[in-house]
Length: 445
Image (cartoon, rainbow, N blue to C red; front, side, top):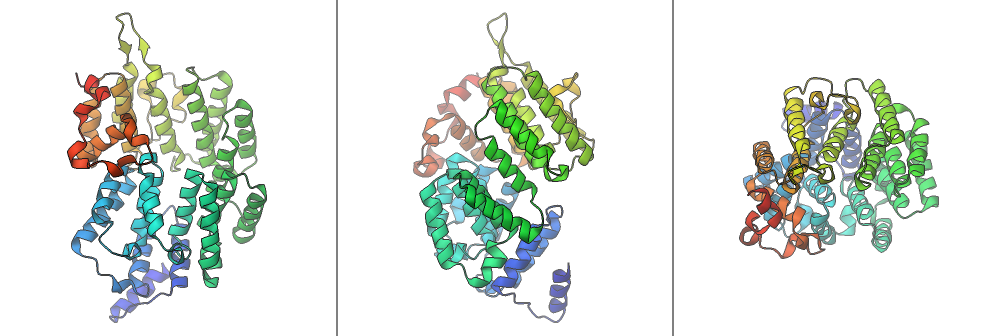
C-alpha cells in the first residue's frame, strides 16, 4: 500500500517513480505473496510494470492491450485454448520476445504447461528467451522451473540451472533466486529428480529465510510420496500431513484425495471403507480450519467429485443394452444448484452424502470451465447429446468461443494431438471440424 501511495504522490507532481530491477523484483515477490488479495496484487504489479526503468520504451498499441486482456481473462478462467489462440496472434508482434509483458509470458507458460498438447508453446517461448532475461526475472524463472518439473527431463534441468548460475546477477540471488516462489519451484525440481541432498538443502533454506514452509511446499512433498499410488504411500502421506499445522496442509489434503479418486477410478471400484475414512477425516479437518470454505481445496474438491461422478466407468449397462447415464443428469443438477447457491457453504464431503441431489459444490470462475468440460466429456462417451449441447452452451456463455470448444474436443479425442508436434502442424481454420470426430458424431446422433 505504501508503494501505491508513493506512486500517487509522484503522479500528483507529474513525475514517474523509476524502480530499479532489484526494487521491481523485491516488490513483485512481496505482492505475489498476498494470495488473499488478488485485486491488490494486480494493482501493485501493474504499477511495477509501468514504473520500472525502461517500461516506457515499449509502446503497446490497442490491439496488443486488448490481446493481453483476453489472455488474462482466459488464464483466470482456465481456458487454455483461448490463451493459445490469442498468443498465436501476437507472439511474433515483437522481434524480441522479451519485449512482451513478462506477466503475459508467465500466464501463457503457466497455462500451456498444464496441458500436455500445448507444451510445445512453452518450449518455443523458452527457446527464444535469453538466459540473462529469465535468470533475472522473478516471474519467469520459477515458471520455467515448474515446466521442467512437468516434463521431467533431467538434461534440460541441468542445462537450465547452469544457465541460471552463469547469468543471474549478484543482487538478484537474494531477491529472486531465494524468493519463496523460486525456492518452492526448486524444491519440486529436486523432488522430481530424487535429489535428496538438494531437497534437504532447499527445505533448510526456506526455513532459514521464511521461518516456515508454505502449503505449496507440503503439497510438493506429499505429491512426491504419492508418485506411486499404493495404500502404503497414501498412509505415509496422511501421517505426514497429520504432523503439519492444518492451515498449511489444505492443498496437501487435496493431493491425497485426488490420488484416492484416481485410484478408485482406475480400479473400477467404489471407495473402500478405509479410503472413504481417509477422505472424510481430511475434509472434516479442513472444514474445522476453514469453515467458510475460502481455500482453493474446495474448488479442487468440486472438480474431483465431478470427475469421479461422470467418468465413463460409472455408466452401467441397463436392461435395454444402453448405458445408464443418470450420473450425467445428476452432475448437471449439482452444477446448476451450486451456481444458484454460490453464497451457501458447500458440502463438506460430497463423496459420502446420503442425498446427492442436495450436494452443493464450490464453483468459481477458476473451476467452472474445468467442470463443464469434464461433464461434456462424459456426455460424449455416454452418447448424451442433450447434456453435451447444454455443456457447450454453458461454456460459450462463460466466454469460451466455438473455435476454442472445437480445439478442445479434438485435443481430447484425436490421437494426432497427443504427439509432440501437437497443434503446430495443423491449420486451425481449415482442418478443425467436429464432424470428423466419430466420438462426437455418435453423441450428436
